[in-house]
Image (cartoon, rainbow, N blue to C red; front, top):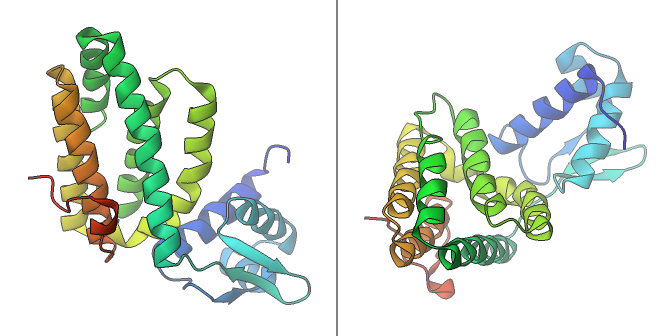
Length: 219
């Protein structure tokens, strides 16, 4: 698919944001006309947005009926988080093999990304950039691509984990703790903090992570 038009991009972000904040609930059927009216645009850019959201796993399209907001089950959510843990653990192991200086350099970059977020959307965007930077630092383009694809479904499952100010503050603090461990060149501590961070996200999303052997607190 080519580059989206500005209007299609706006429609895409609008629908995605409303799915992530729960305005459009799991299993809800959306129509092109409904979204077009909400945005004051024609149906064409909305159709483009729906196609893109289907590719990202947010919607399932039904001709002449509309687009269904795809539910993510607890089991699927655990699978997503386990896959994420594998990819980020690979990144940490790769960096550790390069030595303390590599860890410190990445830690400094990640720490600089830990500023306060004013809204859940800002927190989601910051979290994506933070973890994408960690994975990209390993230098494996295939793993980086897998992580980018996984993140779309990750957003769906973990939206509730960044629903309010307390959750946003907790997430930011966990990011900073992990970054500081890397700055200290302490790979084992960083890996432990990553496991705790993933467990904490599951807890905030209302899911028990103990089946994956994950603690649910960073502190």
